[in-house]
Length: 388
Image (cartoon, rainbow, N blue to C red; front, side):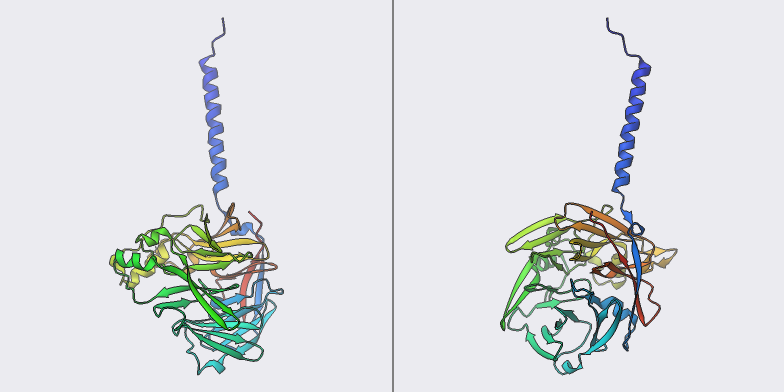
């Protein structure tokens, strides 16, 4: 006759099982928590500005760019008010390239943006005028291309810090459509059922344009997030990644193939659609932009072969009765390999670093600091980010 197991023995095993189970859950939760920015080794950087300018240090920090893969890193900042572009390296910004010779040809405004293709060739996009200026820096030679005969008159190519034009074998632009007033679900479906961007090829004096990309399905079905613009990024195989502010996915286009990959925050909050009753309420628009989460930037790092995505967390609009300061809104840097199989997340919560104005360098990812209290230098840090 087999001996009977005691109730005490069974009870102990149940307690042990529960302890192990809860421990596994706790470890899993800990592993799922984002790391902090302080977990990444950083080196402070100050970039002297050794040329005169008139628009203030904010012009440099908001428009600071680099030529990908350049070594040492070639950096520049475009000022539409100064009608000039300022160039240099991390050692210093030392040169000013005056664009006044274009004054009679284009209108300098906030809707113009400047991109270097290499250290001799550049492009100036004039969104309002639907013009693209091709520039040779050495001899100030230029060619102005009008979109009037290339694309429909209601289509406006755009380029700004959050969605800059991309220079690959073809140029890629985010676009805006005029003539569609967002007022109801029908107009939302009409707008977002169109293509999200424009590709433009320049081949031996011939120009070819094509509307490319698609808005996320939620956008196409009539959900409005006050987000009109796609972000394009080029990968080494000439594939183009497309992302949107209120969508967790990355859309990769390679030739005729489209692939979709998840690249979202571990702590992502649901995206709240913008109420159509508040379309004309500017105060609510500001509140919505602060409170609701969204993805800001998508960046490819050619030095580490990593992809970065910036996620702005959901936030309170009022803190102690006052509108929250931009620097106090938490954000995360998402890091992934180019196959998007693994995603690491680093949270920035100390208000020290800006979620805009970052660029890859051979020495690490440069991220601007919020505090820029010296008009003659740009402050930031270099972060060395390990592969996930």
